[in-house]
Length: 75
Image (tube, rainbow, N blue to C red; front, top):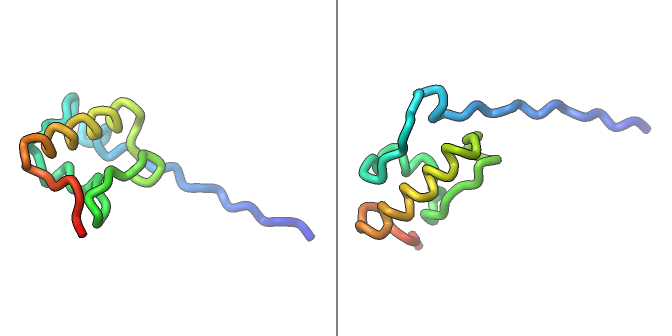
């Protein structure tokens, strides 16, 4: 029996489409899109970010957590 394989839809980087050069840690509305319900950082395979923007998002979220703009965990 032959298996039918589906082509995965390649996600586009949302930040490249917005033409962002730098992800600011003070922009919490944007950063919350890259957190799950427990406030963990989502991987780039789920968000569709490119590697450059995923690194920027990671450092921005970590800086925002240090400044108490975002929570470390949510129960």
